[in-house]
Length: 87
View 1 (cartoon, one colour):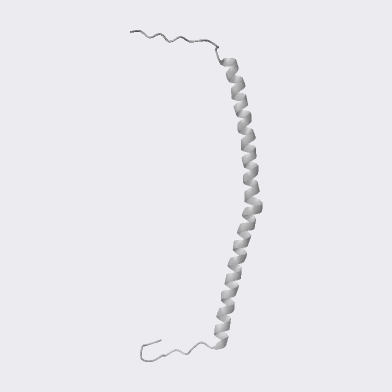
View 2: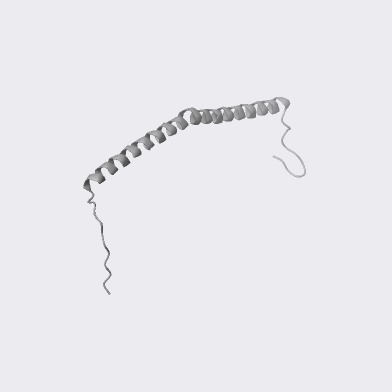
């Protein structure tokens, strides 16, 4: 325990400081490795999947629009309309 008037604990030895520094460096390296892994997985797995999904969605929607345009041409009555105002 530490008080204002006196100190009851001993100062950490050199070995304890070295061990604490090594532990901090190991934790920092592990955090860096995890972050690097996340970035690489995102770049090489998630990004290509998103690009392929976007391209597939584009072609699918383009095909659906073409089908809708072709079917609407068969069902449309071609006529001219005249608007009559009654006053």
